[in-house]
Amino acid sequence: MSDPRTALVTGAGQGLGLAISTRLARDGHRVVMGDVDGDLVAAAALCLHAAGHDVTNVAFDVTDEEGVERAFAATLGEGPLHVLVNNAGIISRTRAEEFDPARFDLEMLVNLGGTMRCSRAAYPYLVAAASPAVVNLASVGSTFGLPHRLGYSTAKTGIVGLTRTLAAEWGRSGIRVNAVAPGYIETPMMLSGFDSGALDRDRLLSRTPLMRFGRAEEIAAAVSFLVGPDASFVTGVVLEVDGGITIDGTFHRDERHRSTVPD
Image (tube, rainbow, N blue to C red; front, top):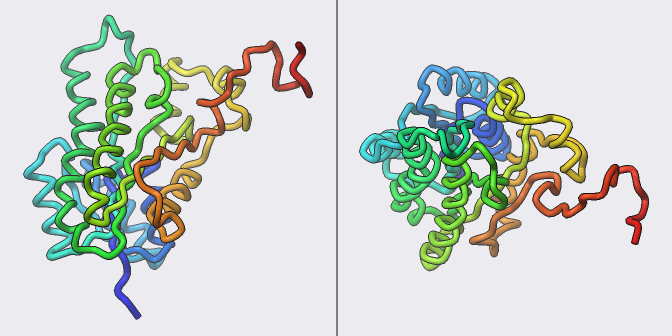
C-alpha cells in the first residue's frame, strides 16, 4: 500500500478549515491542521484523531514568514506535501470612510499575505510530490463589492489574481492552483454578521437562487474535488460555491414565486 497523501490546511481550528480538514482526512489524507490558536486547533485535531483519522496539529501565524517556514519544516520534515489549502482569514465590518488603516493592513496581511507566504513556503514540498495541488479560499467578495468589508473584499479579490498567477507559473512544475469562492455559509464568521446586524438573513436568502445558506461540508466537498484526480486537468479556476448568488440578475418583485418572467 502506498503512503497516504499529505495535506496542510490553515485556519483549521474551526469553521471551513475544520470541515475541510475533516473531509480530507476522510478521503484518506494525512492532514496537518494549522491555526494561530494553538489550543483551538489541538482540540479539533484531538477529536479527529479520536475518530481514527491521521491528523497532526501545529500553531503558527500566517503573517510571520519565518514562523510559517518553521511550522512547515517541523510538521513536514523532508516532505512531500501533496495538498495545501490556504483558508486562514479574518474579517471586520466597518464603513469604508471609518475603516481603520491598521485594520485594513492586518486583513491584507492575514488573508492575502498569508496565502502568499504559505504558498511560497510550501513550494519545495509541493514540487517534490506526485500530483500536488493548492486551493485558496476566495469569496463572493471576489466577484462583487461587499459594503463595510473593505479589507476583506479587497484581500479576497487579490487572492483570485494570486491564484491565477501561481497556476500559470507553477503549472510547469506540475502544481495545480485553484480557488474556491464560498457564498454565505453557516460558519461562526458569517453568523457573527447576523449577530452584529451587518447582515440581513431574509435579504440574503431572497438574493440566493437556491434559497438557503451553504454548509461548511459543501465547501469541503469542492476542495476535495479540486485536489483530487477528477480535477487533474483543472488549474487557475475559481469555483464559486454560493448557491447562485453571484449570477442572479433577477430584480422583479417576488420573482421567486413566479413561474415566468413578464415581458
